[in-house]
Length: 134
Image (cartoon, rainbow, N blue to C red; front, side, top):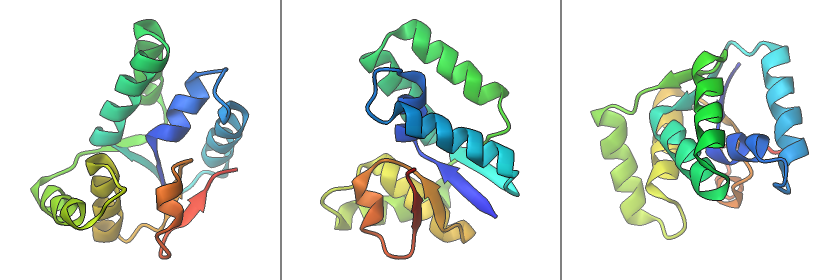
């Protein structure tokens, strides 16, 4: 079983004041302990994660979180041209999704992944996805 971890989970995990901090901690511990076949995030999610962490907390927390991800069991996959193009097509058609979210959905569609750990409500509206949020 493969799962994608979204920036909202990573950012909540790094910020003890975040409303979802305890849930994020539980999700990450659970995902890593279950030993999914593959635990993924993307380079775009990594970018969003460290950027949001820096804005909401500070640079020190952002660097800690980036190093945590880089040294963890989580694989950081690259968004290539095929995924980028599919993401752009999706972005043009949607109202609520960010380009990073569209790249995540495109990645999941291309690789047949249906599980995502996220607190972003927009993902719940996509019927073919199983959202892990607790």
